[in-house]
Image (cartoon, rainbow, N blue to C red; front, side):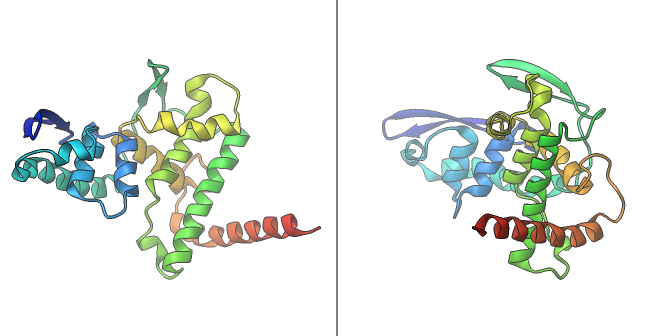
Length: 233
């Protein structure tokens, strides 16, 4: 962590932001990714929890240089994380302020059936949307799932395991707020596993990208069929 006391127009302001990626939560990284025209103060605000107006009251703009360098370093680190295959053996999730540890590596399949189908749809839609924007040719060379999609898949995977409750579609979808507390270094490799395992969502297979290229067409056809059935009187 980088922590500094800054002088403002009305006193002092203590600001602390992560300097290493393993100190950043998935929710923070999602906010960085989703903020349009992200500026230095926006990034520092997201990582520190200090509102932008308070940061704007700092007297000397050069006081932010060390923070800006840390933000730049984190942006480079996240690129390498997308290529990481290291899956943590277990993770700790806080539910109602109570830490709950869950084993991961021993059971990397999405269960029960409702969670499986919901996660599969998220992945299929993410791939189809990417190809719709960037085209089908060599699409796999540029595809990285959005952090929002990763968060949804993880919510479906972890909901029953963490809460011990029966699967509920709406509760599992809302569980993304809990998943955002995970460190991004834990969350992204687990989510990547499921994107690589599609459509099984269990054990990865070889020929990943070739299979996806064929399967996204099936996903599109399925969605068109659903829309057609919905519009039929």
